[in-house]
View (tube, rainbow, N blue to C red):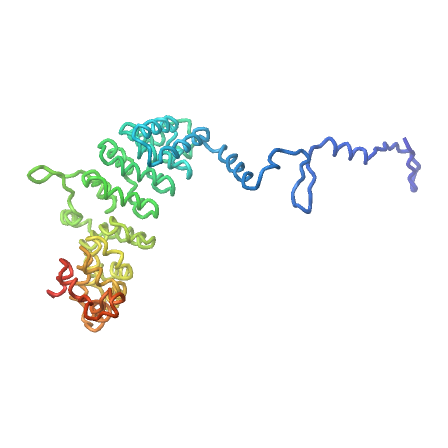
Length: 427
């Protein structure tokens, strides 16, 4: 002990316990295993050498990737599943090898397809089962994916995931495409898929990723099966008319068109137009004019809309997208309606879109109708000759035959001999 004398006031003896601060600091630093910070390298130095220090940067990155993937859900099954998939996708495999590999892959993924399908690197494993598996394997996978909330011990996030949500995920929607492609011959698979997508078509039809699923669904499945789904696009009130009528000599199922629905229920014309207009506007904002089902929706709208509705809404919205609509018959009919009821300004925009594609359009099985309609309704013949018909006077192969003028083929002869282009000369 030492005596501490206070200068002012009473003199008191205060006991002070001296501690060796340096010794305590050294003991603390020795006892604590914290690494020292190196300001030059901007990281902590660990005195304990590890085996990772001897690895190259590429190997370190690969080891970090494997460590990160090991923390994912079903990591113990996904890694061997990806190895099996690499063997399964080899084109030189025989049928027996593919069946054996696919059976092993299906056993690994059984009960886990929903979570695995949402992973970007493991989604292809589920696709491999659908592509190379037999009918029983495909049916089991479809049942599992269509009943996404079957397990009670799953996370709440996965409980809310169903087939419609998989259609909106970037990597999972490829699994749904495989389901539609390879399950189109199985009636039970068709019923499960259609039932899972009910009351979801309005959202999927205007989704940038889900639109691909809707396109393949309407183009692959029979019209009788997708009839209830198509009715949902016209509005919620048409869900009551989802039953398909049987008409004809052979009692074949047919779906009444939207025009017949409106004729039977005139009071639903305005709500249907409002619903379709809002749906089509969202699709146009997301540039969905390249899908066939979207062309059918446009044609359905044009079939029940008045000329004023076509002139005010449809023609200004589609004038700059006319070329994309010419790939299908339904889209071509929409372009013809817009050309007939549109303003002069809108028609000029449509002519600019068709400039340079007149010859190819006249040879197309559907697009030639739009060229004929433009030539029929346009009053400015000089502009039509400049934008559309001027291209027909030039030979598309004139660059190859510049020197030999006598042997040049006629630029009009191929159009006259074609089934669709010859109709231009009948106007």
